[in-house]
Image 1 (cartoon, rainbow, N blue to C red):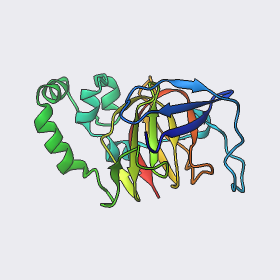
Image 2: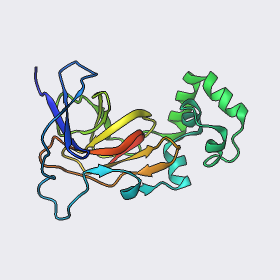
Image 3: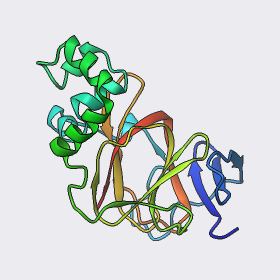
Image 4: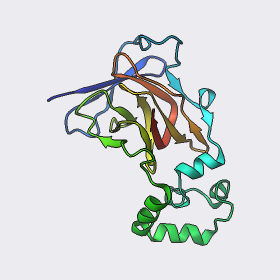
Length: 207
């Protein structure tokens, strides 16, 4: 078993997410509280929530989350129309019927790789990657600078910057969108920041 990844996140006492190679659903195990990341000139909160996040503007949401994304995620017509005023119930029905066509359309419309270097990385190769960790311990990791859209990572619980400065666009259970604070790089590389509640990560940005 190589490169066993142990990401630490603060809730009240900090918990660790330990993933075994090839085990996508490993559970979190409690560990003693850890010190904040070293080398930071300003003390950073270990938790991420609306209190220290920035509400996303309508234009920002439209730039990162398509109407089709919202429809497939089960957003109500009222919530969709907050960002796409001309959307109709027919648009939602059509979006849910044509998943394959929507993926192509979304790619053309949004261009997920705003900066072409960013890419999904193998979480087991290194703790340097920017990682989004779900409640069940499964991870999605990213390497290099850029913005990656169209993620829809539900039940996200931790952001693990690794050797990067990054942030995430996330939505809460009320379908409000926020930008998490810029965080990272961290020392140790296994340090993570926990969300105050489970959220859905829609987009990741690495500086």
